[in-house]
Length: 104
Image (tube, rainbow, N blue to C red; front, side, top):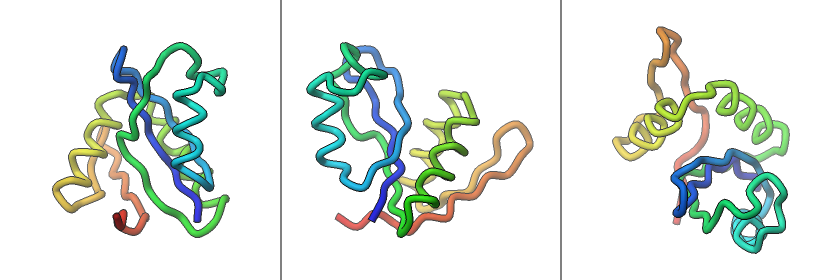
């Protein structure tokens, strides 16, 4: 199982988007400053994650989220997920998430 994830820095409030096949281990690497892109910017927490069956699906979703280049779009994604819907509009373009619900 793969995950596309969004981390949020507890220190700065910045976001980081990535994908992995082991979310717990990846979060530990980010918080241990082992990931160059996030080094020194943590501590990090998982803000949002979506599970996918294949690596290709996770990469495609990561690219889609990164293409938004909008903090508001990322925050709205989390808001809509919490309300039970993963569809929202941004800049008059409808974006629909095709991930199954997180099971914890």
